Amino acid sequence: MRLLKLIFWFLLITGCGMLCSCDENWKLLPQSVLQGPPQPELPPAVKSEQIIVGENNRYNNYSENITLVEKAKQLSDKCDKMTQELQQEQKINQQLKEENILLKTETAALKKELNQTNELLINTRVELDEWKSETARFHDEIRFIEKSQLEAIYRILKQLGGKEPDSEELGLTDNNKSRNKPAMTEAKHEAQN
View 1 (spheres, rainbow, N blue to C red):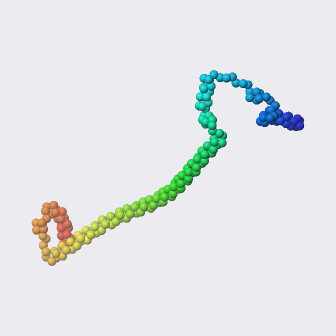
View 2 (cartoon, one colour):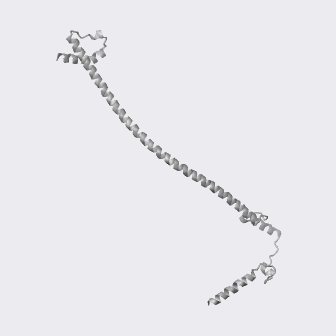
């Protein structure tokens, strides 16, 4: 069975080889058989339509004078041009990736610095609030000390025989008199005690 298959394939291949031979000197079939049936002559109007349809075909955009070598050269030039453009785009892409990495590191550093600055600002605000409260306490202490000193001076003057000045002598108005009178009465009561 195997031998029959080999013989069949050998005969088939040799027969096809003889039919498709390109050698001009050795032809088994006449030229008319190889060319096919003769085509009828078409009127000139039909020929021009076929030419127009053929020109619109996307595969017939090249002129007939361009050889396959020239077409291959054009395609090779296009391929080289596209390769160069691809390399340029890859370089630009690489530069953009590097810039992106750089910007990410800068952003991380700026975020860290912003957090540190924010913490410093919060600490400064807390310290400022503490300073304000301490300053207010200090002012209260100074007022208390000044009040104590004035009361002490008032007692000393009372002990030395000084008399209480009238509000008219001091040039106080009614508003000032009403405001200062309770403090003076408190000082009198303390002096008597």
